[in-house]
Length: 339
Image (tube, rainbow, N blue to C red; front, side, top):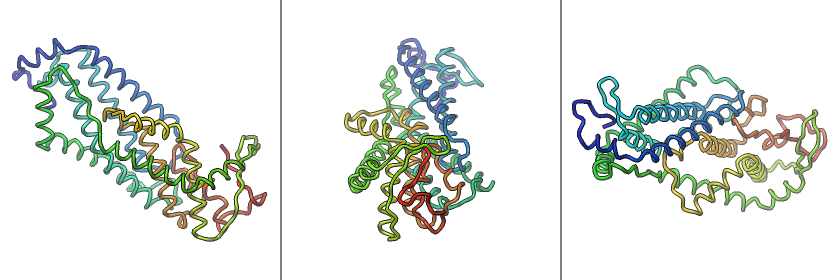
């Protein structure tokens, strides 16, 4: 399905090659070029001393797969009609490859987020910054299995195969975009959960933000927040939720606002664009926050503990809550966070 043998080339594909408008292929190339550039930019600007995780390996694999798709489409668009290892490629395959990638991306949201969430829940309390070699190999194995399972489901499930064949048979000059319902449902769930948590902690968030002061600490700008120490377990988790919200929204508020606008407008983004590295890191920070909140009493306060997230610093959320594991603050009633 992914390619046709030279001896079996039919007139339909010749006709598709000649009459397919080049504007659509050029637009697709530009979109993929922008996505690949954004993927590698996010991988480059992230913090370097971050603990290895499943999501980190998956983000790298996604960037490499997007780059492979971009190069494949570029060569097909440039040479228009060529044979490689006995297989003939035409502009028909630009649409076909894009559809296969879109369908694969569209069904991988749930399994990727589930595996990443379980990974953080089980490892969030670990103090070692460098996972064992066996754990890294397990992450790589999980990434490979998820990708192979996704492509296998798309290429081997009869219903999906027949749908692709029907689209390519009756609409040879169009490449209908595919939007993932999984991504849409995840966006709705995240906006709903964050909005509910924000409404529940609105008073605490407002009070904490109004108490912030900008100070100089070790020749760096810092934020000073006031806090009220409380050893009650329920109050501890409630205050922790407030701090998790502030830390999360302090980094990802523009991205969350963009998600709200997209949902409000009802825009359907093609699946090959929906799954991207910035979106995965956004989900990654949310999953880390959930894991911290669920296992807050198991967290051991060490410097290596705070290198979990490539973009969000969570140290402020725990210090100086757990007074058993931290030194007394220089000024009672305040906590300093370098930003």
